[in-house]
Length: 88
View (spheres, rainbow, N blue to C red):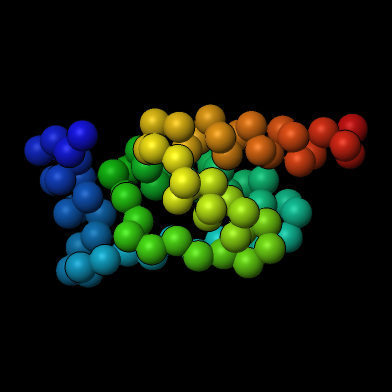
């Protein structure tokens, strides 16, 4: 649901740009930090128009793209726990 507050927050975040892109890099450790980066951006009102990534970043981008906004962080965290559980 789009609210006036979310429109204002998104406009303030984007500045002069019409669209925003979120690009995730690959690598094990950065992949685990990306959920926190996405959380901070979402809390700041950033709703990216484009998502891209390589390796683990591509998987995280796909999780964000395929889920409704309220389920993105829980799914990223779930994937993060599942993907690192074999290292414990």
